[in-house]
Length: 426
Ligand code: PSV
Ligand code: MN
Ligand code: MN
Image 1 (tube, rainbow, N blue to C red):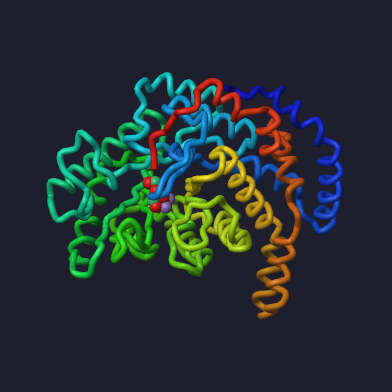
Image 2: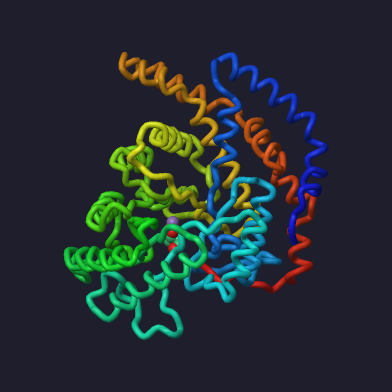
């Protein structure tokens, strides 16, 4: 199924009048405060977030998985789904592939399909947390950190293969997330595990094309519950520095212990020019991978406030690879992603409303109350008319979830693909 522009326009017609009224009101209000509404709308339109290929089917837990009918069962269909989301939201102009789940059979055909839907190939992800049927060595006790040289070599080679695949598609970065760690005290020598990981990453780094980045993701626990080799931003930062200037840290919102100050981590990494990528999701307890903004929307806004500050003031930090890393068991996966994209754009728009000069002046005066007022005034503004305007002008839907439902997208997918489809992935 492909959504044409006129389908979306039809869906928009009913809501157009109310959008215009709301937009008019908000845009007057913001303009009177000296805010350039057009600049914000342009920034929202330019902000594109990659969709992970493994989030297009229903997620599962280790207790079970409840299928959502009409799920994609191959890479073509996954890209078609990203195309549907992008047509509605105009915010999902990229896909992030996981290898070996998504190895293309016909590179040209895949590239053409993606191109026709205005989808780019963002970071490619390696997988050394599962054993593959054909693999000789097992990752049961780790991959890049393993005590066995043969296992480390296999994992290194896999990452080099992933770079090669990504290169053929036009990707420009490799994301490495390792499950490596230990389940019980004494199982691992912490120093040997880190040293092995550093050496392995350095070998992969040598195979990185000049215009590529290596993004090193951290996570405190799970699947290992006693220790994880790359457990926090400090370890990831250390490894990125050891590898070289094309290596960066990647922050995944769910990969922190409860109440971590993620906005401060983001800010410091950008100051040091080492924040390369970002995975969006939300969580109540751990790496819950819940819909972005569904649990802690104010925290998301504060993080965006630092991201916006960094994008404006830290030329030493590169453009970031943005990706949604959420998937859910009980929602239609496409609706889940659309909700995440809306929450991301909303937090970004609110952060763009923060008057950085006023905030700085209040900080210099140690006027703590005014500092909070400035942030909360931006946060409390209902920016949805700005998001609608940005989408409308780009050919997207005023209300993507409504349009998805009124256009009967899921039913159409079920008709085309059937009921019992299963996507490869987590
Ligand atoms: C596992 O925690 C994980 O969610 C990481 O965040 C990776 O980015 C993703 O899986 C894919 O490997
Ligand atoms: Mn992640
Ligand atoms: Mn995760």
